[in-house]
Length: 300
Image 1 (cartoon, rainbow, N blue to C red):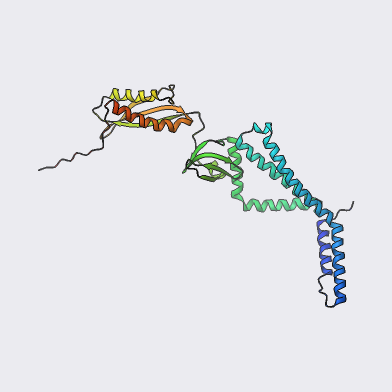
Image 2 (image 1 turned 45 degrees about the horizontal axis):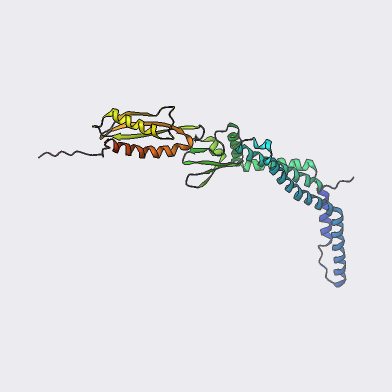
């Protein structure tokens, strides 16, 4: 079967256009002009219409089929075993690859030679690569995040001034939802190269607090009260045992350090509860918390 190349298609179109570029000046010429135009359209429809329709149908059906395939893949049991953050990236890559293959096939139906397409794709790839160096580094950063897994979807992380829960890891960026309900879009290249803290990496966290008490209070009594407050809290773990000891001599008071372990999800509840419970326990046991004061002596 004879194959019409893209160059031949362009040449035929140019030849047809040259036949109808002369504007008619009389009624007889108008009839001949219309006849030539109709013949040109008929010839083009017979010769290339089927190819154009086939290519368009392939694009429409192929793109819809690509969406169906990606949805089926994402909902399959085997795919469900993959980590959530990795799942989104794989789906995006599969969808792009399928659509690229469909586009190349459509061009082949129109008669564009594969060698020409490969050359064009290579040239475009080089140009796009130079123009999108930042985007390519984001893609590389995305793969680093998915392979090394410094964090996953659902983790609470902090990096510089950013702190929040990881909402989505895509090819180019990571979405983070802050505690005050703001969505921050961070380029993968930035977050993969930055120093970050994954607060959710471990199941348990330690709450570190400092409290002050007046010098005249008995040290053993203060340490005992602090320990009892921690032990009496339902969310504080008994193993490791809570720690409460005198840690510093300040200008106006003694400083005590308290360390209590809890589940990671209970951190802030324990943090604020201990601050409140210690104040109530100090009042109950007559332990005073001095205010900063300054003694001024004057010479008469």
